[in-house]
Each structure stands twice: as C-alpha cells, then as structure tokens.
Length: 178
Image (cartoon, rainbow, N blue to C red; front, side, top):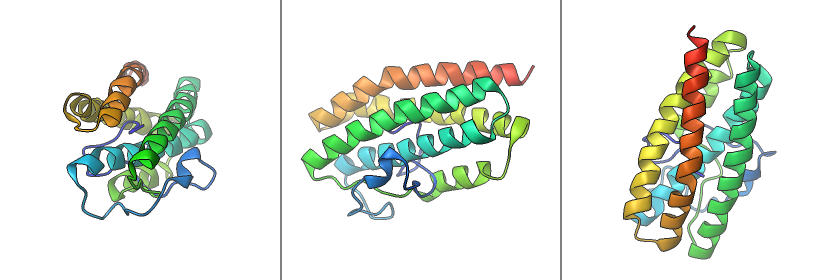
C-alpha cells in the first residue's frame, strides 16, 4: 500500500527495518532509478507503505496519547497488509519494488525518531494528515488512469482505507490542538 505516501517519485522515508513485513520487497530497481509510468505508482506506494509501517511502530513507542498509539497500530496493520498485496502484484508483473525508503520518506522517519511524547504526537499527526491527503490523490489518479488493470484495482481497493486513515488522522490532529 502506498500507505500514505508523499508527492515524491517514491513514497517513504528511510530504510525499512528488517523486522517489517515490507523488508523483503525486491530491490532490483533502486528508488533513484528512473521509472516508467507503469513502475512509478508501485514504487511510490511501496516506499510510502514502508514509511507508514515504520512510523506506526515509532508512534506506538514514542507517542504519548493512546489515540496516537492506536493510530500507529492501525498504520502498521493496514499498511503491512497493503504492502504485501502490492508485493504480490509486483511479483506477477516483474516490477521491482524498493527495500529502502526514498529520501523524502527517510527524512520523515529520521525527523520523528528525534522526538517523543506530546511533541511526537503533534508532529506525527500533522504529517499523517498531510501525507494521507497526498496518498489519496496519488491512489485516486492510479485508480482512474493506470494502464495496468491489477494496479488500478489495487489503488481502487486501497482508497477507502486511506480515506479512513485521513479521517482518523484529522480527528486526532484536531484534538491535539485543543
């Protein structure tokens, strides 16, 4: 699952930890390799999904609010599932997915690794709100315009989950501002 990706050419910040379900993605096409239109969406989705899992794990560890910790757990569960679905599609299409995050996504992870408690909650939920808006835009485009039927179906299937994530992120983010 692109899992809340950014508007970068690949979604996610930083290397996936070896204990995440996404760490075994094929790495024959590094994130800095030029992509075709067919490959750009799955690369971004894979990187973004890995970022969401890593940040979700970090939220469970460094967050202060139970709502933030619960949101992090939802990110790990939902994005791990989507990452595995995308990996299966990529394997059938001979599309290489990254095993590390693109630089933009790694920057997000690195930044949030430096904060804890209430400050972590604030920064994480602001990032999740922004990131999910961008992800929804990317997945919506892929659901309408992808030339590959399987990738189009994946994007369409994942969109409702991303919308739930955005709604949750916005609600938690707003509650932290009160």
